[in-house]
Amino acid sequence: MDLLERLAEKVNEIKELPIQCKIGFLTQKDSLCVYSLPGGRTIEQDWAGNKEREGLYEIGIRTNQQELADQTLWLIANHIDAIQSTHSLVSKDKSFLLETIELTGTPFVSEQDIEGCSTYLLNIKITYLQRSENQ
Image (tube, rainbow, N blue to C red; front, side, top):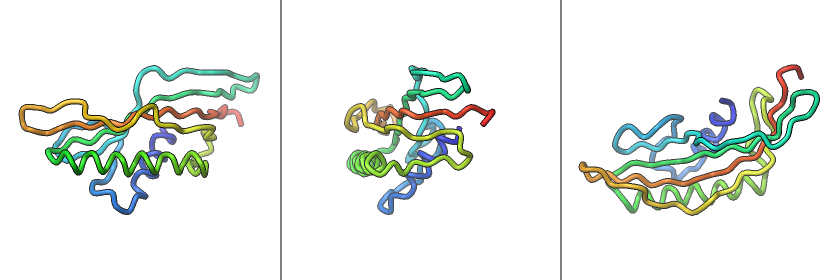
């Protein structure tokens, strides 16, 4: 959970961000959320119980302001690129060590509901070392 919390925290560091990013799903108009996706996997595990893992995450925004949604996700996409170059996603409880964070595509519109709200998404892949609880 620390990884997801640190990712949301990093997104919220963006000064121009119009909506605060929360952990969870898009349930209301004008929401910005980060959540994990299925398909994560363990790449390798050592004898001490440390695991190299790959996780898939998504950042979504739901709003009726399409231009705002597009601009917001592009701000976040650029910020994710900066995190990769600086390795600045750091665990608070020492449960993970970032190896790579990368966009698996560009921001895209996913759907529009009957209320006129559009959902825009950005997909991210994070490779990290999950430290054993014994350490």
